[in-house]
Length: 184
Image 1 (spheres, helix red, strand yellow):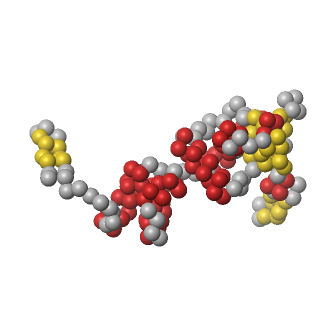
Image 2 (cartoon, rainbow, N blue to C red):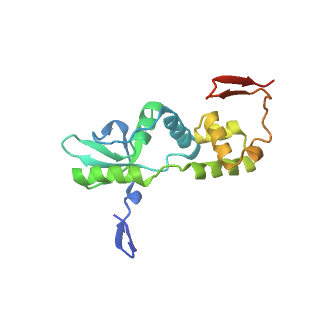
Image 3 (tube, rainbow, N blue to C red):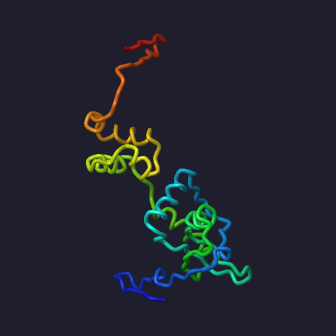
């Protein structure tokens, strides 16, 4: 296995040892706590179609089962197998015991982080500034239109909504008096 030197020692580079295997020889582990919504699965499929399969599935080889057990990449595997009906999949194989595999799964999941609202809002604003339509942002980022609108509001309503159609109709409810006020 290739390695590189760092200030903290040698770092293994299993990414250079990617192999292509029969997808039926790969199976999920039984401990992954990660779950992905249907919308994000569709976004992952779109990403693979647009950008290719950039990250091999991380596995270990289980001699007793004669299978590659997934450590990281279950959702990429699912897209390849169930959505795209691929017969083969690129994997890398780690040599780890079960406790290290379980920790690695969580490390991979948590290291990806989460998208912060302010940063996603800035990203939406940057796309709008480049002339990208709300619809294309929605599709490209795997968001509902409502989420795009909410993110636009975070960065400044007037500027981001300047080219939007609107209705002068409005409705307001006074919660204390249970009274409705209506516009045009």
